[in-house]
Image (tube, rainbow, N blue to C red):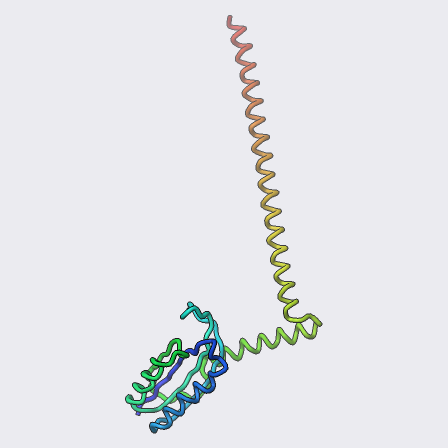
Length: 186
């Protein structure tokens, strides 16, 4: 018997059925004398690129010990299930029973979101208002940056106009000097 890690992505519309889908595949493996070493519903995560116009998917991970024939049957069932966007089956050398790094990362992200939510409640600001405040501050920063760039453009135009006036004055002075020399020479 071989050890495998199976990761599959469930369509976001089927998010509520993800536990049922996960248990269905676990039961399929158990029914054919395989063992489930680890079964995780990691949760919804952002995709690196859109798949079938979906930007998020529900990730599931199963570590199993079974025969190659059972894996072939599982691949076939993934192929004909519209709820499964993608799947990956990797053969492993050892049994893995500890939580996966994806699950740990998702829990840390969830903890961060929970801390932000608790902080917003402590400050008597709903989470949406906190987001709006940060959006306003970024738009205020954009406005200030635009005003500064406009001021720099105005300053550079004034300098250019002053240089043009100075160039014109020097030309006039030189022309007057030449005309005096021309008069003296004649």
